[in-house]
Length: 382
Image (cartoon, rainbow, N blue to C red; front, top):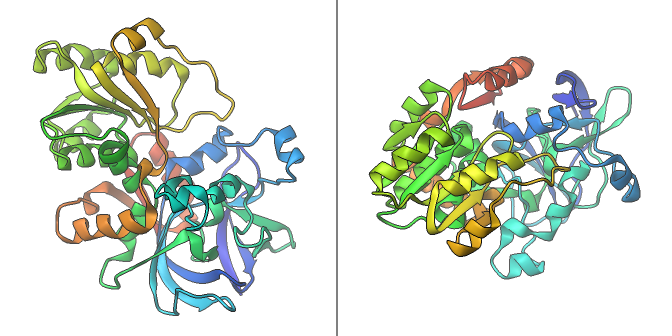
């Protein structure tokens, strides 16, 4: 079938919205008509080159990362089922999880589906079911799809391992957000940081992930939630989503945290900046107390390996620095659970969407994100 998609032909260029040819689904795959796609920062990392594989490494494993159809936050309705594919029917409503879950690998079988072995192939652009392509440019070039999804298109073919069935009364345009940003941020607080009732939490960076971390910390019962971001209107917005205090920088937050905790500092701190750098780690660790925990959720450049960290302070005060992917959540359990919280009015998703765009406006949407004008932009399809 013919459809349209936003293609990134190479890093440091704009998204190109073009007509494409989409093959029908094969075994273990479904064709989905999307209602919406979030404009997540991870796709921006493809543009900037921060999430681009080393050419020698890519060649070693026979991977071709570009051209690629972007997008990985999406929700829609199943239109067609591949042959001998079970678990889904035409008309099912689904949310895509950027982390697939095969249910069979060691990580999945021990309840850590956010570490599914299929994650090793997410930047290959190929179908996770058989490592081939369903999306093709008009000139016949095979097109990769971002983390096996490619939601910057009103139609896409994905592996059933990346799709989570949801109830049909849930608004799809809001459900799309839990495929990445909301679950990642919320889980950063509730799972990775393990926020407990009465604790003090600092969240650094107030994009879609950071705002969701603020909500997660508040829902977990934190007494104080310090929301940190240089953009004033985002700090004000955070106060409506569960934050109790705000600061423009980590340096500005230090004396405020000391004051409200009588010198103890935060129990937990979450780094949710658009791009993490090694220089951010030392000030992040300075926000937490003895035996406190700092969580790095932000994506960094794939080649970055220089971190500033006071090892004496880390060991003598028994501080913890931990990593986090998808909020350490489990897609098939947590996506429906978060949507249930939204339908109950406990999780705020409507308030997370700053502006909606058409597919043709995708480059404007990302420029708005760079300019600090949005928490989460969303592409709405007809």
